[in-house]
Length: 495
Image 1 (spheres, rainbow, N blue to C red):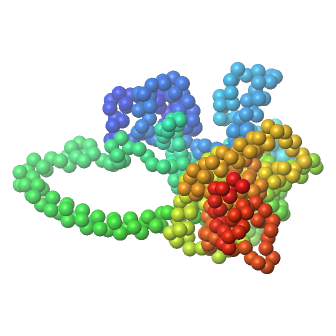
Image 2: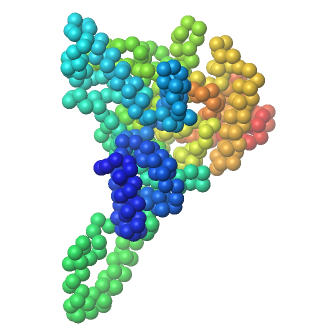
Image 3: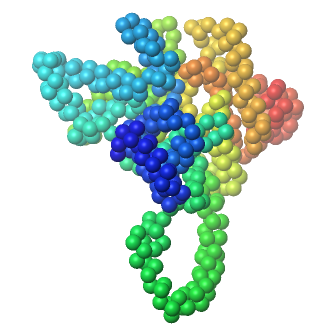
């Protein structure tokens, strides 16, 4: 528990004393893991600094990811360049991360000031204002720094992560591997977690083999004990290894099948619903009162974000149920068929595993599924502009040829990735499955999980009342088949 400079100096000294060989682990408590790494790389750009972080883990506040978060810092940077600040910063990456907390603190101050003025109290009395905020422990809003809510003592509940230094071909950065959710009080691995690379191939033990003072190895000086150890121990060890090996083999066969499907199952109660396509929004810029429990208490809810396209009248259009899951805004797609397929079926497990590997900037990120009726649904990344179909129909958005070429490039880029993946083809490419995020970047959706969604991998076109509009984008050679595959073909995608 120290400042950034001292923490790095401590790690460098540990490296010089050969304490980074794999026998010790260092935990650093930092507010932001990004500040630590930026400071280290700006002052010591050498291999020794890189090695000093190999056995270090950083406990810091959970990184708030997403385009809205980075848009905020871009706006702050643009404001700082104007009067009266005239900043000398060169990019939004140099903006202090505390600016997001200042933004949310002003929102909190406004909420407290409203309560003070409503009761006719002195607005300059800071103690009175603070007491009003502490008494309203049911405040929830999604601000620039993430979800803001407080406990009974008026303390903010913050999410924390454990970060590990990960090396890739393109960059070296801290990646969150474990995440503590203050809302559910649970710890779980993050989607970015792959594995921790230990210098000796395994984590260090809690204690040295002979203890810290070598007392555990003193009995080996006895000759009789040494003979017994050398003769009997190998026999016992071999027998134990054979027995343990058989047990582990059986466990591995069972666990392999279970682990393949359990990663994607989400408890619906872990999702906080923010807005519905119809009805009253769960979060809005205005203060709404909703009864909770039998006591008739009221809850103050506030948000500083927009969730969809707005027309000339300022009306916001929401295209799907929006929720909050693990700090991410997600879209919730409820299944028409609420009878869940066998989630343990090998073919369905294979579908989930293929989708887990599909990570690309032009593909919608898949988080998982809820399988408890009547809330059977798919949880995926939320794109606030809706689909390409919605954007093209919106007269308020002027699209020049550069925008249209950008859309086309995004679609081709995503399809090229799908065709080179184990999925091989999309099978459902049309304007409604080309989603558009807040930066007008196209992200493809609607691919994969065919057997989970429909119980089969082939689609039969009904002779009576066929839905021709759904077949408008289907290639002719597929329409001629009695049973066309849901996943289509690469040539069908190109058509």
